[in-house]
Length: 196
Image (cartoon, rainbow, N blue to C red; front, side):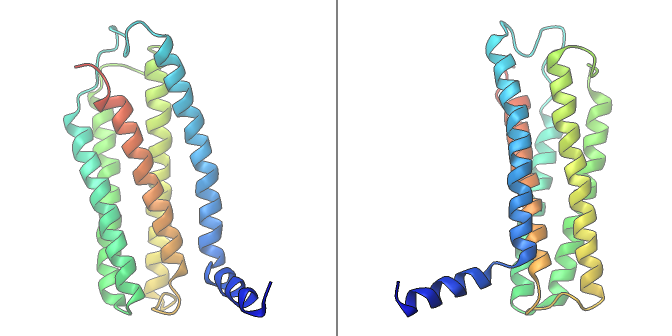
C-alpha cells in the first residue's frame, strides 16, 4: 500500500463522526428487530387460508394513507433542514426542525385516533397481536424520534449546532428516515397488500 492510499483511507475514516456511526449501528440493530417481526408476519400469513382473518376484517386505509403522507413529508422537511444547516443557514434549519417535530407529533396523535377506530383488539388472534405490537413499537420509535429531534433543537438554540458541527443533526436524520422506512413497510403489509 502506498502512502497516498493510506492518506485516502485515513481521511475516509475521519469523515464518519461518532454520532453518525453510532446511529448507523443502532439503526442496523433496530432493523434486525423489525425484520424478525416482519418475518413472523409473513410466516403466519403464508400459513393462513384467509388473511387477515374474516373475524378481524381489513383495516381502513384512509387514515394510514394520511399518516404515510405526514411521515414522508417530515423526512423531506428534515432532509432540507440538514442541507440548510450544512450550508450555514441555522435559522432555516431551526424552522424546518420545528416543522419536522410538529409533523411527528401529528403522526402520533392521528395514529392514536386510528387505533380508537379499529374494530379489533390485541387479544383477537395472531393478526391483531402482530398488528398492535408492530405498529405500537413503531409508535414508540416515533416518540423516541420526536424526543431526539427535540434534543437536537435544544442544542441548536444553545449554539451547539452550526455549519461546522452538525453531526447530531445527521445522526437524528438517519434515525428519522429509518422510522419512515419502517412505517412504509408496515403501511404496505397491513393496509396496501391485503384484499379489499
